Amino acid sequence: MTGRRGLLAALLVALAVACASSGKLRENTQVVRADIEKAKKSGALRCAPRELALAEANVSFSEAEVAEGYGGRAEEHLAAAEKSVKNALRLATACTPTQVVIAKKVEPKVVRIEKVDRDGDGVPDLDDLCPDEPGPAENHGCPVAKDTDGDGIPDDIDRCPLDPEDKDGFQDEDGCPDPDNDGDGIVDRADACPNDPGPLENRGCPILDRDGDGVPDNEDKCPDQPGPKENGGCPDADRDGDGIVDRLDKCPDQFGPPPDGCPKQYTLVEVKKEKIEIRQQVHFATAKFKVLPDSFPLLNQVAQVLRDFPKMRVSIEGHTDNVGGESANMRLSQRRAEAVRDYLVSKGVSPSRLEAVGYGPTKPLASNKTAKGKAKNRRTEFRITALE
Image (tube, rainbow, N blue to C red; front, side):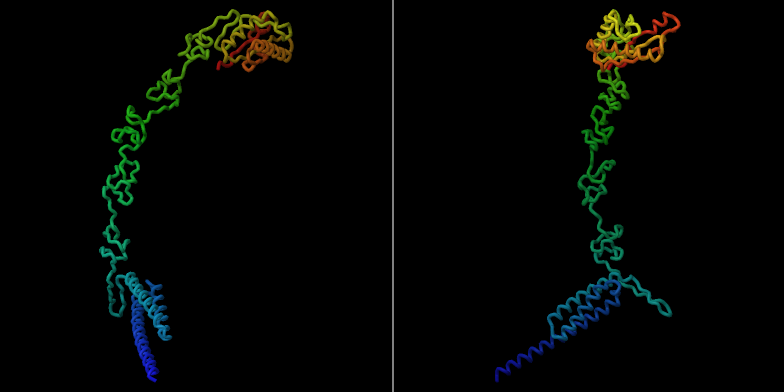
């Protein structure tokens, strides 16, 4: 009997505690409800709609859980509601206009609301670009970056915060001084070309070579014409046209073969700038293209000339008088030029250096009206086409 009375007493005590706890929760719920209404009037519906909605939802959950006897969960939701409504009040205060004009029938009434300045720098949060970091008004409320070396580049992006930039138009954005922009070992103040590397003897400027002949312009007598260094950078001259430049030619005014460029004496031929001049004609059988033996000594000397001038190329040109048809003479002159070429090849001259061309009667030297003129027109010529 005594045990039952004890259990009943314990239950009565628990019920009393629960009722007291529920009463406290309801009382706190009313406080939160009042804060929610206050937040709405302060502009939370416009400035903090999310926080206001969270506060209302959590206080509703808390009321329902108190009614069902879940005090622990009710306390959790009520705490969440209190946090949300505080955030709603704070945000509503921060975004509320600095003054509100309330229209009345007689005259407007101005209600002034104090401006918020969270970082206390004197710049209201509405105008402060850095509302949580104090800074001067001229910098829109943001802190002024430190610039230890005073070069106008803040320390946080200055690669040399203790050495001021020299501001000379060369890499001025890195904050580091550049006393030798082009890195040629000559400081800019003594460098005539501070942005282009060059040797000291040229005052720090690059040495140019406009014609690309390897001779610098300051040493080149012909800076716009390529030439060897041995000739002062000027092109080599070859006055006699024998393929040997004057500075290497011992006879610069006389056509001659390598290596000295002096003329070589031949008995039956003479080498001139444009042709190998023969002192007698090449003889062929009448109306035929076979070379007669009496012309072999002459052609042997022509072959010798070609050996003496190993880079010489020759056009062997056959000509006739006007006796007979022109087409027949054209064929005959071509065959005779080829016969001379074949003879020279047989003497060791490369065929790649020889060209055979027949002109027939088309290029006469004299009138074909006389026997003397016709004899002069029947000829073989050796024209020099190249020496290189």
